[in-house]
Image (cartoon, rainbow, N blue to C red):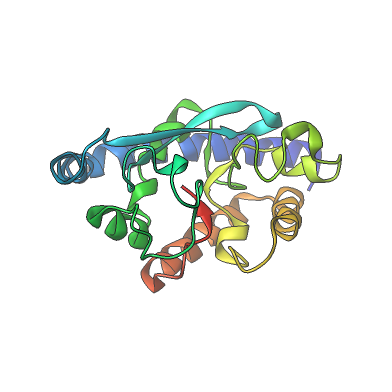
Length: 204
């Protein structure tokens, strides 16, 4: 892909991100309100879960999700990681949200404001598995583009390989990026959601 073609694809990508997150958010807003009310009525704590993540070029931003665990869950048990669906820190409604990936829906706001994209590498926390400055030059390529709600790693290897292997898939996405690839990934993401593949051993 030439420099101009890539810039054009990135421009179209941002346009799709903005319109997709805005229109999508409006359309599903009644559904989001129902989820929020259900979370509030069934467990103590805020409706939303916010956490610092590494974004494009290592910039730190706060990712937004529906809260699926009890308050201060990251300070209890396995901390950031949820190894099984039977983790007693997960709320009843949280199990449903996680199984269907609906806990990710508030990230449409992250996409709307430009911190994230619909498709891209998933953003890690700033201190795990590495700090930004500890990634080597090749690994830092995964931060060349905005992180995504879904990505090539999520529809291929997901949690089946170590973090450093996932980085290689992220870099592959960066190097092969095109709008068509994004469309394919979004389509595969929908299939993954309905197949209810395991999401565990992931940071909350």
